Image (cartoon, rainbow, N blue to C red; front, side, top):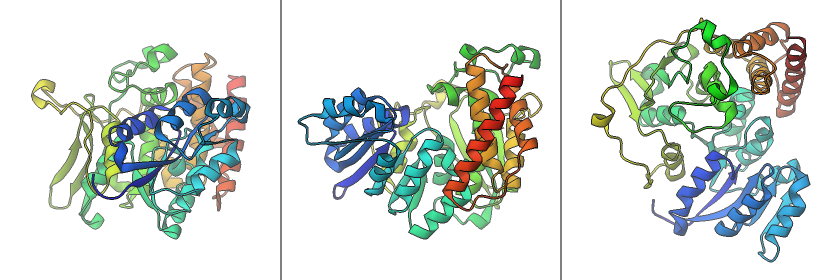
Length: 387
């Protein structure tokens, strides 16, 4: 990447996406100026990163940890702040590139604040498009922002679509690893433990997203995201199980050509694509060795054992507030599973129960989305306690 110094904000700097982003910035320090770094509660690590990268401001979302952050940054000249309002203010400072990687609905308002400043939003927060897709995409258009996905699948699709006409797309295919349970019987799935669910065969991810991969909800949520990011129509979006996680997604065109993006199972590849866009930048990732991999296999998803993708498609079809209900119910169900309160197979069943009992009107604003999210979570918690 060449050119003048670019400014960067990382919302969620101490998480896995944030760490991968800053690893790339560390290798290209003379090309970037860091505006803001944020974290949920890890004040010590946030302060360390803020000092290393010379951030203008460091923000801890949980205000309880603000005194520790201030102490750790004493004498550095770096501003320390805390709380949800401070997160929004940091995002609103504006940067050439904002990496939106705060997990959950806590990331919605800061992401919206960044969108309202224009610039490039490198999006890793699923809730932005799953729960608030219509609201967020309207804001992107209104403020002239550029949304670049850094989920590996959506980034792959973005790369395969670049320079092509969306009207010529026949299929967009999201690939799914199938997770750790892809070959398990229903009986075995019923007895799956949290420890087994978070042991992903290909990717090193947090507990929530690992469970989502095991249930296939992760791919269902990505289907909803793709629906908003790539407006070709829901009927042109499909999912295929690809256990090797080498082909990250594909686009087939009307002439029969299929373009696929391949790469190692390392999030620094799609993050680098977004950071350097429209150019390219070096990464420390090992080159793909197809001869060593040997073979690539594909198969249709099983929506009987893994109904999550069906539920997500139905939610996308319904539109409005329904995807937000699905996302909120899933988060509560996953937390209940990780806490030993419900079985693995109850996750999808419980989400379907919430969807069947709660159909609020379409949200017109971010506050409407958050109200839907709160109510859906409350209903999901009632189901957990009554199970």
